[in-house]
Amino acid sequence: MHQIIDGKKISAKIKEEVKAEVALLKEKGISVGLAVVLVGEDPASKVYVGNKKKACEALGIASFEYLLPESTSEDELLALVEKLNADKAVDGILVQLPLPSHLDEKKVINAISPDKDVDAFHPVNVGKIMIGNYTFAPCTPAGIIELIERSGISIEGKSCVVIGRSNIVGKPMSMLLLHKNATVTICHSRTKDLSDVVRGADIVVAAVGRAKFVTADMVKDGAVVIDVGINRMADGKLCGDVDFESVAPKCSYITPVPGGVGPMTIAMLMKNTVAAAKNKI
Ligand code: NAD
Image (cartoon, protein in one colour):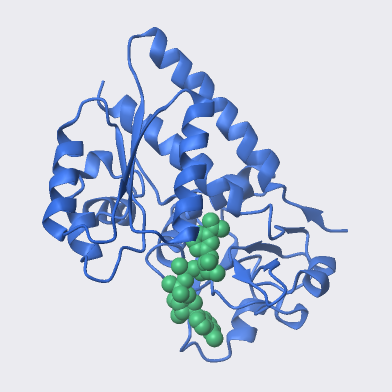
């Protein structure tokens, strides 16, 4: 019988813990603040930024929102990042991606102070994750580790297969699992016999961006399956990278979409912001 890993419940618990920590810091006279920068009018990005602001408000974190027009130049954006780097009230800086095409994402990410890079996309933080000595881990992979461990699942010694090698999910996910002493395999679009590889996994993390990519024949009995995918179907509904209906009966644990990995990302962003504030003490 499979168990559903409830991301809403686990993320709510993490937010409670963060709220308590923020209150404790406030008692010591330490404020916590997050700056979120959005360039342009992308509707999905607007929703994400709005959700981040709401989460900050609910947890007692000061939120500084910068909604810049699509026409913002790279120099203007870099100047804002510099200003936020120097602002003592700002512990975390998040520039919502994707940026409009005339802006160089790498350049902008590299301009954020690594101490305030709560998304953990700066090369310094990526390097720190590689050597296992880090303050911030990217929110989605870090949230997945929380989902697994808070469900009482041990990672050590397990065979883990991560499908997808993006810088945001697949690669950092693999490193975090490795730091937990898993044996990690990364699959990607050029992997041969992908089904065979995935069938050997105790823990599967699917971050492909293709609806129902992982099917029941690819998963071994009793596996833990984590579905990172967010795919919008023709009927408007969200669908994961895992064919939930057929895969779930074979699993010991599985995350649903929506309500699995998704809610963890903001909770981990809040956690990273508090970590940044504690770092400045
Ligand atoms: P991406 O497009 O950057 O990377 C996808 C990866 O999948 C690539 O590394 C590619 O090699 C691999 N891939 C593509 N086709 C494949 C195939 N046929 N076989 C094997 N591998 C294949 O995507 P991403 O940013 O890593 O995101 C992946 C999914 O996770 C998307 O659906 C995205 O929306 C979702 N996502 C969810 C959250 C969340 O908070 N839940 C956060 C980030 C991303």
